[in-house]
Length: 283
Image (cartoon, rainbow, N blue to C red; front, side, top):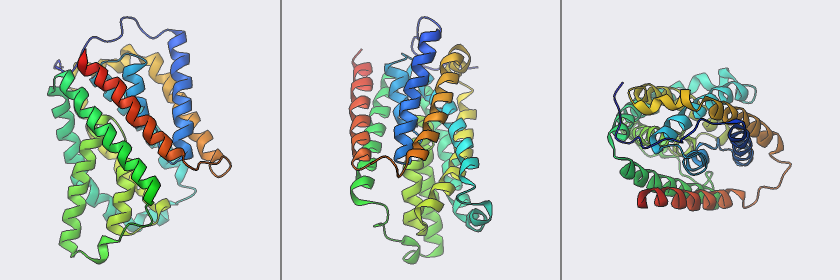
């Protein structure tokens, strides 16, 4: 197992009961708010893992990846009642097209992240999180339904090439941040294939799962991968909180007013990313 230059000193003590309880309720809140606007919450967990639970940056990325894998796996099964497998199967070319790029992007980006000095990785994550916050805000303001259907404009080869390129970029984002990438995958599927939001959401999960597994497998080469053992109590409590929060958020969807919530969450993401990773770069 190779040590990584991105690993800084971890938390001085293992997570105690109070830490695990704090992790559960923090993840519960993130999952609940994310569920209300259709997000898994991984982008919000990353600053929390670094800023609140003082994990080293690469440790936080790997821990976030593990939590995201669990959430996506459960979400795929949970969504089958809304979008059955019989509806998904005719769209397998969409999944394969994006995977052709995302798997390569995830493998390369994970290896690249492991070689980066921790301050450089902090800077990369700061930029990516702020870009993601801007994307979330744009989706809330303009909506996805306004996107054109490029499938009607591009040639078949051009369409396939653009799908691979988009998958490559999304794989890079997902691997470096430890997220599923749904915030980028869903608008990409709507834009390139003109599919409705519900179907695009389910297809995005089918792309996310293999992409995350590839990145996760690459991260096993890093010494930071030991965070899954050293902080097991914290991660198990956050996994439980994330799943319960996402479930509650889904149940409250349509019951609790969510006007402006997406914009507020985008602002919170940008501010928290700036405070956490800007501070880490200056220390």
